[in-house]
Image 1 (cartoon, helix red, strand yellow):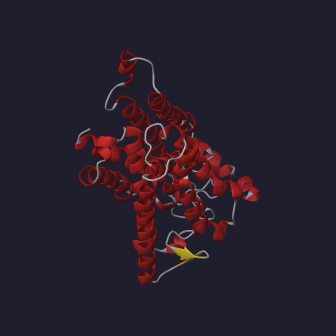
Image 2 (cartoon, rainbow, N blue to C red; image 1 turned 135 degrees about the horizontal axis):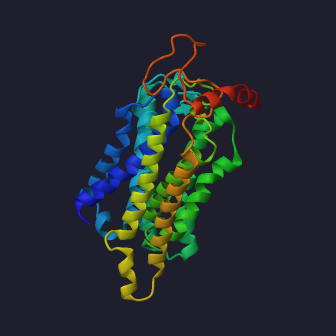
Image 3 (cartoon, rainbow, N blue to C red; image 1 turned 30 degrees about the vertical axis):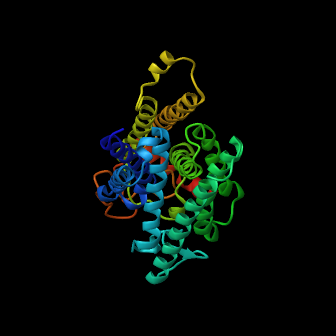
Amino acid sequence: MNIATIVFLGLLTGLHAASWGAYKDSPYEGFRLRSYVRSPLMGALIGLALCLLSPLESTYPVAILIGVMYAVERLTTEAWKAIARNDDQSAYDIPMRLGYRGKPIDNVVIRYGVGAAAATVLILGCWAASAVQGRLELDKWAVVVLGSLGGWLTALGGAWKDAPIEGFGAWKFLRSPVVATAWAVPLSFLTDNWVVLAWSAAGFAVASIETYKTYLSGSQPPGKFATKRIRFHLAATRRRLARIHAAAWIAIALAIATVPEPFWQWSRQGATTAPELAIIMVAAHGTVAATLVMGTTSDDTGAHHPSASDVSDSGRLASQPHAPERQDPVSREETSASPAVAQKR
């Protein structure tokens, strides 16, 4: 694969992540193009870095590379939000900044120190795992368990941030490890490198879980905005974001199934192998996910939340809190359902 292909795949993974992020957050923050393009650009840079700084692009299948780039982009973006970004934390129910017991740490030196320590531990852990792998033989299922480590780290990070505010939920905590383990099964037929497998499984786990949470779980508000009022009604924008997300899944599936060799040529080389079946499984997941997203969002034009919208797709603020608004039928339907939803909450 050439550099342009890998960079494009990195951009694609970033676009996938940006679409679900903007879909969830835009009713509360509005849609900002600068924020939206951040993840695609970061993904493209990560793809370029993989080509220039490592042999990954020449030694691993596309499915593995996409998972790795997705995980690295998510980790980089979330680390930036937690360590480097300076914004008003009162805008969130759950602080996005690095915190302790639910309280954001405002001291920059402490934040950067913790970030540097965490990065050092992660790098040393990857190095140690690579060193041990050269001296230890494990069976397939043990490798799958190791491949789930990225999911466990994701769960620990989420619990550290969310549990002091929302409380600890066993299923929420176990969700990432379980899904990462499920992804590690087919991906383990595409690589036997423990570190690469863990990164790739973690990336696909995040992509799958966020697709489910954003589009398939009833459009519940994000935890960080759980009690915040909806300020923007961006129905058309959110429909477009859902379509972009579905298209990204389709593009990912096509890339996995056709690069570097189209799947329809496999049969010419004899019986289908386990790695080829694994590629088919991963690609099929993308196709199914895209179909579900389009099916469940075809009639969804707004966030489901007890508060009414203040700003429409045109960006015009309502002049008074109770002034009549120009809303489409779905928006009026959601607003009328608000008391019942509020009572339920």
